[in-house]
Image (cartoon, rainbow, N blue to C red):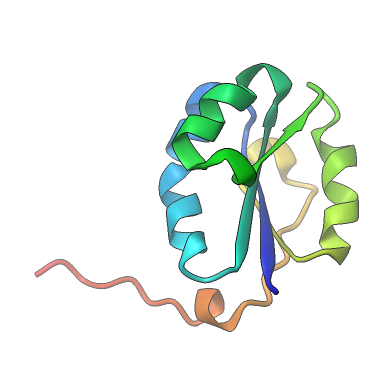
Amino acid sequence: MSAVYVLSHLGLGDNITSVGLVNFLKECYDHVYILCKNQYADNVKLLVGENSVLPVDDGKEVQALIPLYEKGDVIVTGCVYSRIRSKITNKKVLDYVPQKDQ
């Protein structure tokens, strides 16, 4: 079973803008998880699904993310995390070519 963990900036607006990414990833992985602040977990669950949210303590997101590299792919977005790298091994994601507008 394949899994991917998504870490964006942890503001609620940042989680909302990640919904498109999460929906795309659901086509490529068996399980997609998005890390979010505890205080936003209920709202983010409404957007991406109950089982797709991993709440974390504010300021502890990097510590929460590190062990997940062993469990699956990791996608990190945003300049705040410039020292943390994404890990993508899923061939469908790596080979994705955006469709051109008609």
